[in-house]
Length: 93
Image (cartoon, rainbow, N blue to C red; front, side, top):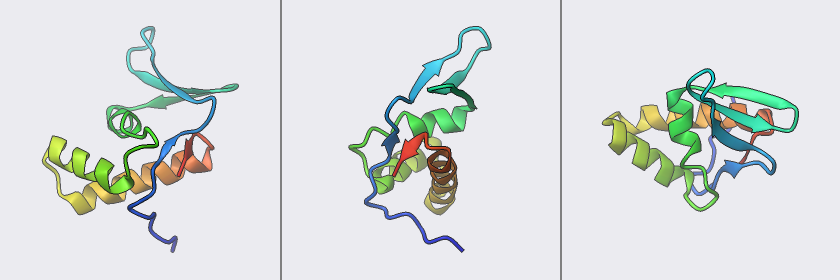
């Protein structure tokens, strides 16, 4: 089992990665050098908060409040998403 991310981590998009609206397909994509990754609405909500200033705890609190969802559930889903994006080198934790 992987250790939990620190709630004080300040995730941000990796250098050269940006979130961009894809008007042709409708929706958003994460763009990186020679890579494109479609981002669903949930991922967009998380990524928009990953500015390198907010902590993981703050991001989870904002999303739990915004969507009126249990904090533990939000924390688990956000952590899973961020770990996946970090593995793909699209997010720095």
